[in-house]
Image (cartoon, rainbow, N blue to C red; front, side, top):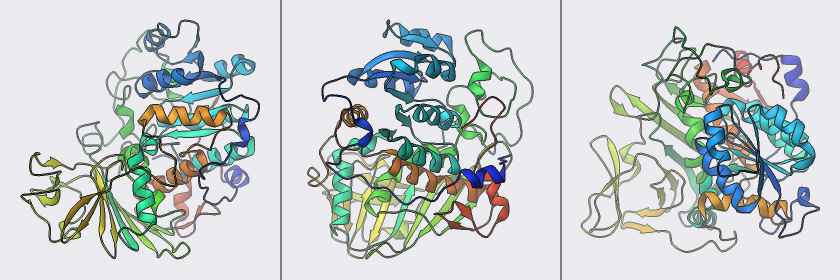
Length: 479
């Protein structure tokens, strides 16, 4: 937590914005000047972890002209593949020096550095591909969307399920009424269990320090975050996700995937209230569990929606949607089945397969049926009725087919740079999704029900919530 903000500057920079929607066939205005077969020059910020594949996939469709990573060993390994690419440790130096030679930027750093890198690139009129969650804070998400629009650049967030035909088909099917009118959505995740350490194991600032490895620029890894000493095996390499200063917890890590299909299908925008139950909250790490309820107003002919997020374990029990959500099901002898047993949801595709533990998934509750997805990305879905479970098959009819997963995300982004349709997860959608889900972390931090004025980016009933909407950047790092 420990989030502070210059209130006057915050309000000065904040502008109201509505929900943006992707339309098939729309041409990106920021793409002018490139022919359909021209490869853009791309620089990649963060080339280890998820940045490893992001860089390779960007290289499938563009020219990688520079690489940036704070770890020299990681940087050198990637440079062995892209031998002509310049190497940098500091993305600020790279963008400044390479300005005239680059068209586009990928950002695959820890969450707390996303906005600093992406906003700088967009202000230089560079097209940006940024990993999920789009930002570390609510304010940064709004700024990212507004900057992309102002600078007229092509953007894409890396929630790869967006490039799957299964997700697009599910979105179309729900909007066509396959389960009737939807009033509730329930989404759960297997994080942070078995992925990283946070509360209750870590409840205060870890003590001590270790020598910084010769290959690591620790000051650059910290970036905009408050200074703290290096500790071997505590923050570096994904473990940062559980710390308020660096990550966004299980909600930020996975909701851009798991809530993506439901958010799109239900045309969700600004919630009106956000209320969180959680384990004990401390100043260092996210709590051991949470159940967060977002309420959305009616949208046209669509009724209000109650959207509930579940994560972690409470008193040794998984925090999950109630078994009462799905009735009339069980371990069927034939065909697919979904059921709750021994503190877990299970799904069986057919009589010849073993039941799988659905540790991450979603339910959309309609007045005719339930749509169930047993996957992180919403790329596979089933209609559940008292009579059984039936898979949603086929390709999307209105949305274009892609179905190339993560590489398809880069392909769409590059195609848009060259004048094609706007990417499906461009920042006008992705920033709204990110902004909304990160409000859940604000609700966890303050421990009170929030009343949200989305257009004006403010909590109207809990003044202390304002300091959690944006962090104060360390000297030398700005937006």
